[in-house]
Image (cartoon, rainbow, N blue to C red; front, side, top):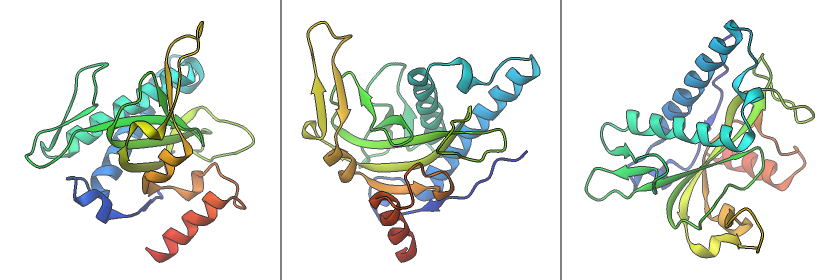
Amino acid sequence: MARPTRYRALHADKLSAFGLNPDLIAKSVSHAHAILDEIDDKLVQVNSERLGQIVELANLSAIVGNLFGAGMAMNSNGAFQRNGPHKYPDLLARVKGLRDVEIKVALEKNAPKGHLAKEGLHLVCRYVLVHDDFEYSAERRGCRVAIWEIRFGDLRKRHYNISNTSGDSGKTAVVNAAGMETLTPVYVNMDLCPYSQNSRTYKRYLEVISSS
């Protein structure tokens, strides 16, 4: 079954000043989806569960981010290059006047997090887990990754809630509500949106789409 490709590109003007555009974002999402689908198909062929069933969600998010970043570099015509593993930022600008970009990923309505509050330009990618028919259910998670939203903008240290509790597993920096509001939506698939249709976020998206 072919994966549905319904999405809306938003606020193209916010991207263009930084060497980005809606087509690059969409191609990078498709790249991540295509690789994930190929992995899932191979796993099913050997009677295994899909990737979303055998990988912890934190690790799955990291995989999604790496594949999306690879798609960004591959489709940017040399404007961006992937940085090395576990290095900040994820995308290095290779054209004068552009800036490096960090990629963060989160599941559903969650805010992305990391060990440190990383400042600079960010692409925040959020995804849901859909079923084999690529349909999304808010009541029951599926096992296939589907990116539903991407936001873009400049994050500062004040946009993080930082925890360093003694005895904790380590430092944690979570993008806070103000940080998420700072980021501009540039890609959304409303068929996969995990927010309730009565929620403020869902209604705001409909307003933005109707005016675009």
